[in-house]
Image (cartoon, rainbow, N blue to C red; front, side, top):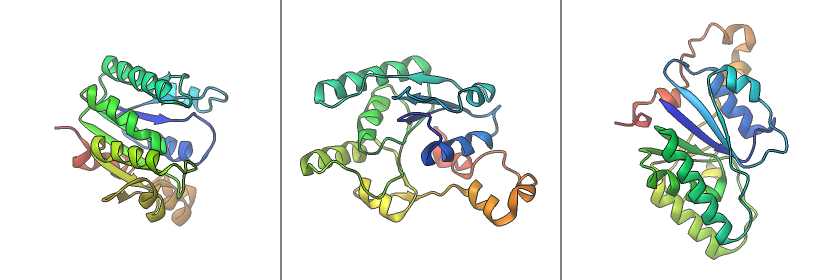
Length: 196
């Protein structure tokens, strides 16, 4: 199964750490994590991603303005269409709706929006309504790292997911963690996430 994560960049930050923890502990013969990023200022994890069988796709053209967002959406659609992904997981906050729309047009059956933040900076109520509407229409699943993050990005139903790998490390320490069967992250083992 080919899974594409859409991120702002590959910085050594919170969201990237969560996704890389998932990547390190999935069953790589069954799953391939690729990454589409929008910022090339600092690319961390590049060597590790490639060693784990993943690819990094770069689309460095998103900026403010509707024309730019539509051009970006078309570029994402074109990349998705050419790479035959089974699942797209967008970690980009409000902009996720455009990326998931591109995934829908590309025929990707599983489209997931993940909210990592309890607030976003855009204060235009019309824009926020549009962003949430696009996510509501095009996401097959909505995940949030907290209740507040979910309420901020989604209108209705969302599932709270946590970085269970870090919780296991906190609970048992590094030694015990290596003895726990981590052939795939729970979210990916969930049959509802596997396209029919």
